[in-house]
Image (cartoon, rainbow, N blue to C red; front, top):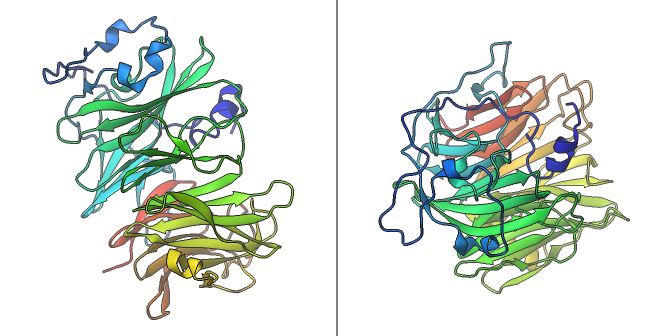
Length: 431
């Protein structure tokens, strides 16, 4: 990747800022905004926003009008033809790695890549065109100059509920980023701004929105800025201002589900780590487990069916790429009772990113790699296995074998979604 000023500026905001997929075709017959007679606030035509500038009053989310987007437009994306592969049992469904997973309803999974949202249903990959011309999604933007550039910075959706999409806009002339959480009804296309935030270029204090998660009664996110570590913010339903749950600038990973938000913290001076959890039940964020040095906890993943269960990496050394990485699982009740996470693997090789769902656990395993079995995922590897582990019986089998660094991204009801440098594919684990 060629490092430019804008790529460095946006690195903490979007992992694919400098390698976004090509824009989807524009449906010239669809308007970006249509009138909504039920909305008392003005619906502004995006074509009139050529040279608008922000004001102090416009920084309130309530000042932005709700908007209507056109109906979804299915559009199957093109794939790479240069021998792209995601493993021996994997079917490639995207030529780019996802930036966020949004929702799973039945056999349908929705995920985001840069400015686009995709829907995967039983081997199909159809684009969900939220606005028909979603490259520079003007129907979701504040009134900013046409030169401003925007990108989707994540999103979530509860089953049968609205989308919550984070749109980040770089406004060069005003030297700031605009972050907005848009709540969008899937059926009608009505979009309203739930939260609005401005972050100056080069701001050293945490700001912005990344890794958006949905709890039962509010949103959580990891602040995004030029820092390497972050804070966790919580915006309760009905509130207009988020609460900083950590106030430390020390958070790395965040995963949320149900009424629990899990996150890990790091001490940049000692590399010491802790596993924290915030629960809506008691409105408290506190450490739940502290590994003894030189052990570290990283790469957490929450069970999409039970927010009180998670999997994680346990390793030795620095958090960026610990050695002797193993997979462990834990529940909130077990940790609060003083029990340490239960190790699922314990050998000299690296077991990397994991995903947990009920009795099933999947993870990347390098134990059969003769080249660099204890290396980082980004190191050259001659064999990479995606392993399925049954937590009830202890049975284990290899789901997928590849030669490029790869990892599970999401575990669905019957399939695992896997990414490597070629893109993302799907591997069934229940036949």
